[in-house]
Amino acid sequence: FLLYSLIYFKMLTLNNIDSSAISSLSIDKEKRTAQVEFQNGQQYTYFDVNRGAIASVLEDPKQSIGSWVNTNLVRNKDVNYTLGFATA
Image (cartoon, rainbow, N blue to C red; front, top):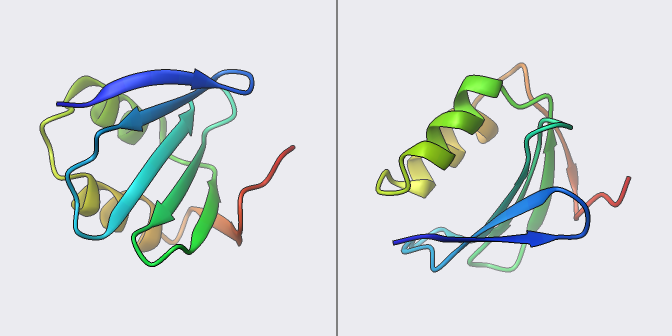
């Protein structure tokens, strides 16, 4: 199961992710951002994440985090991203 921890300001980090693709996922509900570290070490920050998508991953920790990232971040044309973890 997933554990949540607070980092920095209001960023929620999902720990103990069982994924072959995702190493870590952190979400800021207020700023609608997500930070993803992939198993290969690449880090991305995603902006304008759908509020419903954020709620779904926080409310259903048993779902596939890899599928959630692909559907709601990587393949979502409404979401912008930058390489690395944005600090502001």
